[in-house]
Image (cartoon, rainbow, N blue to C red; front, side):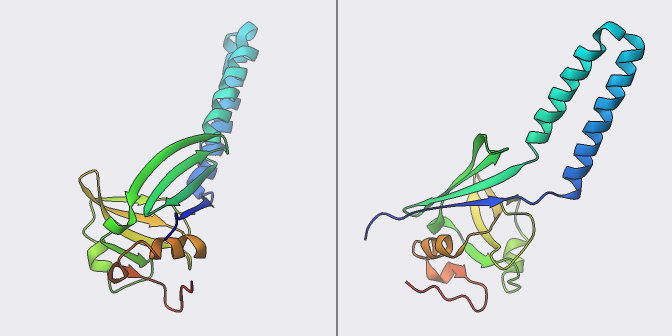
Length: 175
């Protein structure tokens, strides 16, 4: 059997919280402009420009994508902020997953109810491709939420024990 390498990008959907943060940042910049123009007229342009730069920098962290890289049984998940900054979030062997089940799977809800930590690396909107994985990560029982496409799911299925994988009803992985 040859090497297996698959990668996938999942864009996180903007939430109401993200919109509220953007609005608050814009309001703060406007307030800083008015306050600085009343108190420090000569420095108001510089102070406002600095506040605007800070707001834009913070807003860039609201544009998030997750990259899944599957290589020979190991799943790496990175976050990409504003299509420019990358940070490794998780590395796990899929064979170490205790369970991998579709998000709507009620048969394994009790197992996922005992987790100590939840890591959501999906678009944020549960859909037909959203799966939960139960694993021990850094000494904690962790629920990992991901959205693998068909190719990624097929690669994971080839490396995970079939008794641990519970696909969405109607999904058949054909080689």
